[in-house]
Length: 237
Image 1 (cartoon, rainbow, N blue to C red):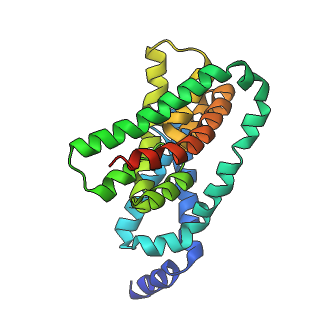
Image 2 (image 1 turned 60 degrees about the horizontal axis):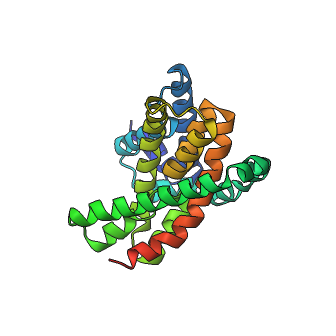
């Protein structure tokens, strides 16, 4: 047992171990989601987070040690965000046809996400740094963390809030749209992208290709608008 523990201690300090564990956790979560018929609650990101959290807790691994190995995945968030220009370009004609309602929905969604989060946080008496960390939570992680740092929030806390927002949105939005009898895949996807960024977009692509494309567009546009509106809203506090 002593030799096994020494081997684990040696491996746990290596960056490739935690990158491998992260990828394996997601592949396992994706498999579970597939077996569950892509049920909203079987969200691959949620399941992967749970698997990783249990692994880190069971092995007594500090987050800093884990992040040293998994930061390559974090680095890829930037290029992935820029790549959102691809669905926008591919659907440019369809976007032009629905430009006015899309811009109205984008403005309403972004303003609601920021103002409701700040309003509820303020009413509950959150300290200023935590309150400001809430403002960009509906934007994709690289943008949200950058905005949080700029306005005086805590980027690490914002990252957690972004994941929670995305997971909850991916679980709730599609069933809610069905209840509201919204059948236009463009509207469903765009709403999911604005409300739940990348995690919601991944869910949208699982449901319908058109919904996924418009979700990516909503995600990208909301990231830009949040970077403008969140600092303005934060200045009021």
